[in-house]
Image (cartoon, rainbow, N blue to C red):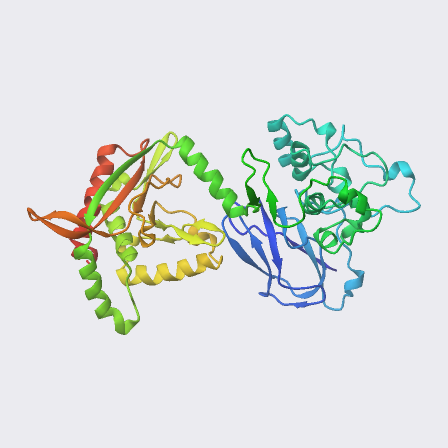
Length: 472
């Protein structure tokens, strides 16, 4: 009996994801542990490993499809001795309700016309997500055409109505079935879906059908009706007040989450910012000596490695800043888990150095290099970026002198580090030129008082200007 391969939950908070890329094709022999696909979650792009063995009989969700609900059937696996031609996709009743639900079964030629008609939207079912979006936007579900199994209304249907891209409901038995992504591409390119032959389950039109579609004489007039419509090139003319040309870039899941969380942080977390100037010369000299002694081991410490350790030690000395605001209570942490901001192709992500206060500088350096590499390749595992008790963002390597970082809730603080530069500085009562950097702490004022934040910044300054405390 064929096995159903379902959309996995690759993180505790994942409810849906984007099937970014298939790494196998129909007919391939699959063994347990084989990498089958790359899936984009709300945090990173991760590899999906096969659990069962067999022959890949069908791919039901095309690559590039967004908002695929966890638990949706995405492929079928034929067991040993089973002919892949005999494997059938699950019916709408057996597939889980998802916002990228499978297409309806093909209509039988002999079926009565009334039975082939989609159910009236007045009594149509809708997924919980679709109902929530409709309620929030004031959309009447009776005006929405459902594209899910048995006419079920899904998220994409409601969003299409809100965006004005869905045509008025068609009640004929010749209803066009297409994925939301295919509908969007067809609209962008001026393609009439009625002219496209679907290759998906039940004749559903998918992205590949739009990509391979060649306009016929019938569809050509439709594409040329609006002579002012932009061409299908990536660069379009903006409909803004300034008519500046632009190139539309689709937001990936990571960027969407970043936008949502940063907006929530600035709207709901009262930030207080405290800045100190720190003399770096002693730290740079210690780093030089340590790197010389660690060279035979292949270890090279960065300034950032030492600052991670300094922040962890400062939080140990001022534990009232190693906290998170939790509504009616506050969590004070006994371990310093430092989230370090890393710029990855998909967006900003913060891998975590756990228990950084008790780790050696060499261990922090090795772990940070490994995590940063995995972050840039999109291969971080959930336990490597979820959590953290405080964050560090360092833009000094880009020449940024000073900046204020946004807190990453529910954490209570984040340290923003600027570039070290030559400045006039008073050392032991005498004016001299020193390498100085500005560091700014952003604190959640609900959980951390200004004086406590100031104490933490003072401890950080002390540890960096007297760095022998970082090696013990």
